[in-house]
Length: 268
Image 1 (cartoon, rainbow, N blue to C red):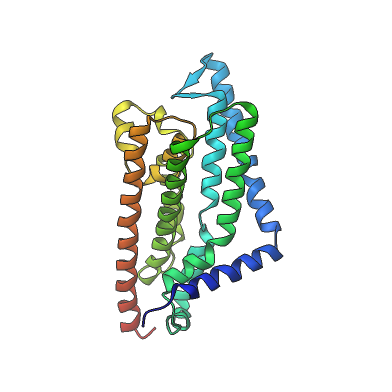
Image 2 (cartoon, helix red, strand yellow):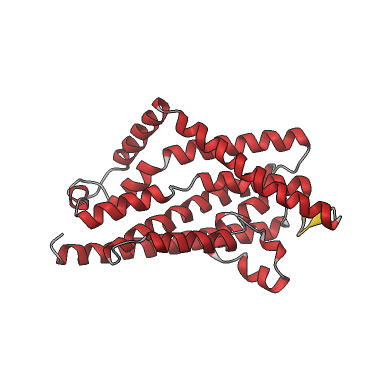
């Protein structure tokens, strides 16, 4: 039975309404990246001072701080471990059966349900960063660069949700997926440019890493924001982001359907 998209919009709207009742969730998500950037940024500013260089890996002091803020607020868009916890629990206990009898696709329902808080918090955070960058004269994407940045963030969000829902789907085969989640976070933190900008690596490694899916989560949108890439290269990178996003969602939906067959065969 074909389900109208209106039903998912209703789910989304209900979550937005709940969000407005508990605004503290937004405030906490807005404050946490600032604290994290203050700690990491302080270490990098010390590195700038020790080396005596005005630029490291293509970043000035000012652009690097803005980059850190941008990628931390992009990370806010992620559903986080809560999505994995929910899927893991429902699949292990068999409660997912109650979801499956409803006239909604479970994966799309999860997306609509988990998106509101990250979406509102992430947009608010990026607007704050933009105002801060403008005030201090730091680079801000405008015109077509601004459009590319928005597209890049959109692709990052789609890929983030594919990764997290994909980890949750592993619950059909693995009892406890959280060790895998921790491994994913460690690898992603390093290869996405979240901990170390990929420009720090050698040219050969950088040329490979920036086209991997992890770079889509932080390095590419953050780099576009601070003007790290020529416009023509930025277009290619954004296209690669959407290719990875499409690939992973196809993989996620395929895995979900396989998992359901296994689940039903076992009488879940």
